Image (cartoon, rainbow, N blue to C red; front, side, top):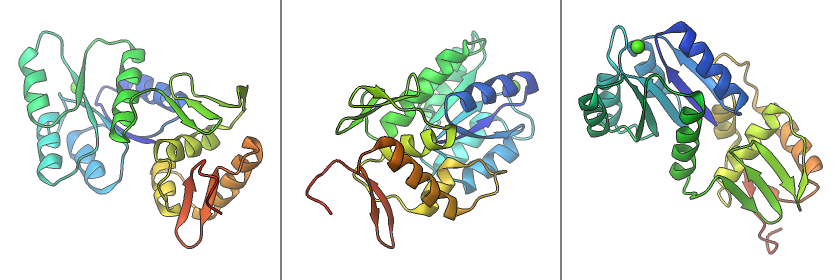
Length: 223
Ligand code: CA
């Protein structure tokens, strides 16, 4: 899962991006509205954390432009305290949820988890495929109840496939959603990660769909 964070206060941006990184997201940071708008307009994100008070272009305009252009990724806005009208304007402009400053990072993470899973059509934080279970709250993976130790990238890959289970996901899509924009991307490494994941899971849940990509499924009928 890849998240865009648009926040102009450096300390807050750093705190948030560290927490997001630890929670298993690839994170891109923009420090002003123009850059943030551009990234959200051109890169595929699974969710956006958008501060409303921003230099160059305010958060509300950023959001309005995206929505007018048909960009429909989930957006969590950060609003100032005691500005109820800001929340209303934000939601009317197409925000999916808001958090009021000052906030506990945990609240931002929880609301973001909910937005990401709802966008992928899941009602709970526990994603299940056969006896494979991924708890997005604790970033924990178990197979038949036994915990599986994954690296950050392996976890991110599995989380993306679990969110989009039973659907064919191309390697390009994986590259776009697993790495931040500064990462030296190479779609060949995806194959390596999938191989490691299969080995660690000890299950044939990640199918290769020749020429198209991968599909996570526990449907035993399919070869
Ligand atoms: Ca601000």
